[in-house]
Image (cartoon, rainbow, N blue to C red):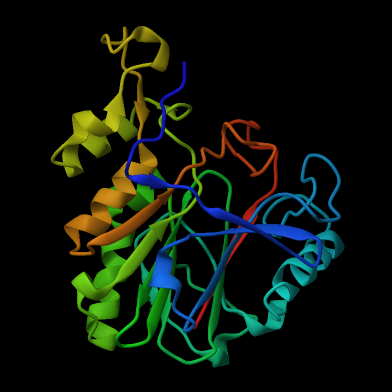
Length: 279
């Protein structure tokens, strides 16, 4: 048995452009023409197994020519290129950087959050079970893109992004629109130490985030194993930071390896799918 995604989740909308599929949130940014965003799948690229086919990361053992060919295909769906987007050197932390077009083509960091209020500026990151975090300020014209696995959720990367936008752009959290993209769900994310202690030490409602095994009917597990609800943890962080409109994608990356790369399900031997967000 798998956990069903509940009412907090939304169905994301599939689009196909230049024969390449990607997903968008229906209500993120309330349909504003001031932003564009996309969460790509693993489909439509050139990479061979186990990076098949739209691997967008140079941090795995795929050939560089495949990665850059894939990036060209993916980013072209929104009239961008590798050198007209800002990239991040990800480390599973909670640091956030302010960027502009002068950072195009660069790997900023190490950080797990990028924010900008520069018109036309585009952000991109890659994922394989960690959650994409998208934030938009419709009143002051700012955006943020983040990467939050269990460490990012515990260290409050989503909240750090909100606070960075407050400080840099004068954003009011209640005005922000946010989304948590496809990531590993509580159906598949079995965890032990040190995750258990870290979650219990930092979340007020930690028991709701650390679920018993799906096949135990809600009974206690033997031993020190639980299933961590990563999308809900990131949603809670955004709500705690004052964001009132938060969407959560209704995909588990480990369940849907036909659509997304999953570090957990594919035992570390896989690629990375990407997300882009542009102002």
